Length: 530
Image (cartoon, rainbow, N blue to C red; front, side, top):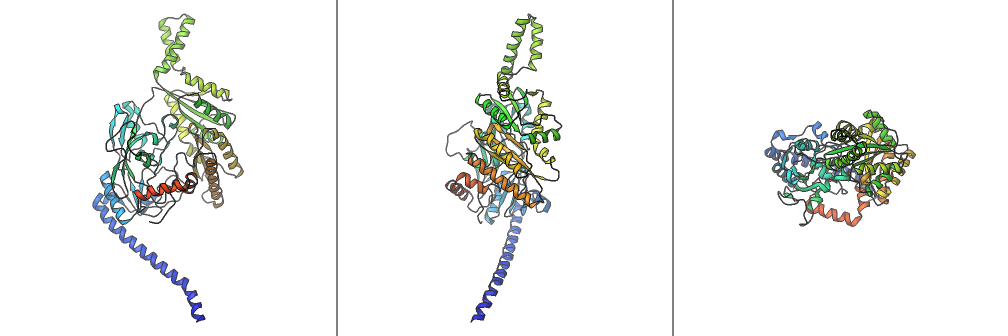
């Protein structure tokens, strides 16, 4: 009896191991059979050329720009229309196969990783710009259209779409992550600029969040389903069309660079500029490490100090009024002729700006800021903002062979200087290299931490730092992410930010719209079994 008991105890773990192996083999066989069956159905829907099982293609679609490891899907499909997306989704739903939407792969939180395998829906072939309503200032686009492609299309209409996250991201992907960027302080984020969405739900149902074909400038009809899907990161449905607000291209633009002796001075200037009601279009902060990196990478020569990049947008009328006032004053003082006055107006046009610019200069100088270095012509302005958008590559060049771990937080403006100062101290204390850049008009900033991917100890220090930074932002009544999204890396932080009851409501919405948990599983909310 005793010997039997001893043998049973010794053999039990082995039996468990054997059973587990059998179960895994059984599951793998079942999964393989499911995929074979699904593949046949997919071929009948979109054809052989729209399906890829190649390892290189799958790996390309299993990773974004983040440091999260590549998790490739089992296959990639390339639908050409919403009807194909719907039909493919119905097959996946029936077989309980995960669906991972893919735009351009420029995300920074692992949002396209196929954590449970499944099918990646690459939407690049759906690249039509539809239903441009110039007089209504809106346009509808498919998910393969990027922001640069849209603005190139709009160039001759006098309209543009200003939300600019830096990367040439797909517009539907930008809606899915609630992207923003350098122009958000003036024009808002994707959340404020999406009017309507066409969405394919997990079971293949097609819905229109504001009603089919509707594009009013505002509405108070029913639940705001549009904003439910903006920022949902592919976990509730596949966005197959988005209707966007457009804006008139500003008649006049001017940019400036101003450096400061301290972070506090730069942030104080930002707050005071906004309090003064200056309708500034962009106000970007770069710390001393970041401006040094940009100088080296983009061949600039700005002082290596905390710096603001600013841009003003206005109408020619407002600027012309300022020019006329200056010209009339000059002509009356100098007694010059009308012809000479006109020449004076033309010359003053290149150097005179609205009162808003003067107000901004006064504020920055009262906070020990340098004189403005102007970027007036389009070429100089484009070079300046290209340097800002190339900050990612400039940071990487500081430490060749390393990768950049990008993280962002957002806090109330009154806490911005404190959190940036404490963050810089934290990085120095923990021997981390990380330039800081931020859309400070919104209280949002980014750390681009350079890390050796082959150094586990350094990776661990970076991970701990990003968690401390996010929790510091939460302690200051901010958010763990201002524009990157939650993805894989900030799910636990989202729970801390929102609290259990709010997370429970989110989970309830997810369960209702996606009861089989096939839509981009494992993102935003903590994972659960299929």
